[in-house]
Length: 190
Image (cartoon, rainbow, N blue to C red; front, side, top):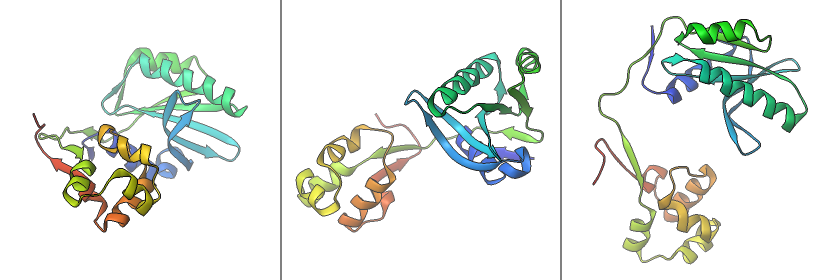
């Protein structure tokens, strides 16, 4: 039995074992299409591309409609057709039926996979502003030290998604491990 606590954990496991479960070569994770969509996994077999949409517990017809939009947008962006997989431990009957009538999309029930949510969620909060205040460093000075644009530094504590290159450049400039740029706790603050 393969257990996981989030869709991200499922995604990482399947990426590591993409050839085993889908017979595909890994191309990208969170592949962006037209700045509108993010594909969980993009794989390929020879010249054929495959878009894999993951659902951690059950895939319903909304997953089918979602992957249809992805396939259309992918063709518009790349000029290439792609096939789609909806992968989940359980796929509802309507979705299975829809996939039977669409030659480009297949539903894959992941046998022996089980979603077990973590009982105590973990929260992460960026703390760059606190570090800079404690050290008496301005965004302008850190920008000079790290090469990270000042605008990106001023947004750092306000966003939930961070550029890895920026994080490592900031940590290197401040001579701290990357994880020190964040406060990690198990209960939501405030």
